[in-house]
Length: 353
Image (cartoon, rainbow, N blue to C red; front, side, top):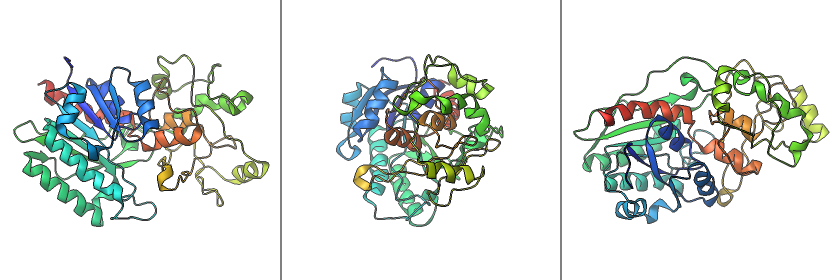
């Protein structure tokens, strides 16, 4: 593939949070890989010019990837290997087979030999046995001629103008001899839940959205944050509403904003604060558990996939799987695109120079 823009490859791409942020910053994400066909289908729809491939990284080699993507030079490799075994939420399992994917990802980085790389993961990667696994992988990358910015930092999306408290480890790596990147400085601009989804309250009054996920009516007054996400969108997808029993509605109604409903353990959003971390749940081969879905701050219902996407900084024209279970999983698994874009800007300047 010939491109005048810097070339990026995305592994464990999901629906495409990292891909979108890097594309918005000026990279061409020419190929993306994930083992989940549901995610690959969503990535292909949102990035029609990218080669979206369903593949297990354990079966890939650098040579195979170059051939599939039609590439010689790779400017950057980006990816966030599955992190459930490292997560501070629930049981940390150092023997979780998904943990080995971090080492496989680092192997591919070595074989592809890009100028830069990104490792994204949960904050738990920096503690205990998980930190030892990361150190082992980085030692192998050092042998392949790479360095990385130290100290490795944990970035919180809320510090970068995203209406969600989401802490993630970002490893900024670079080939020995390339200019050293820097972590982006926090913007300290707080965006609230109300600014993110306040204009979508009409969704809660639309009775058609129990069967369809598409809303084509008039939205409410938008904040500056919401106006940016609405650009280019003709209709709103991901608006399917959950059907709640009268008892569930009663419990939601009794839960004050900022508190957790005691039976479902669903947090109720506070419209003047940022959202707690949106979680993905687990795929079917690991139990198919549904993550706690936030309760709307003013209406007595769970938020929709589109409202979750707004809290994650996805633009309205970005589409997800039409079912709630897959849609929430795709949002919760993703890197907030706005955060990815800020990180990407730090790197593209060095590559262009």
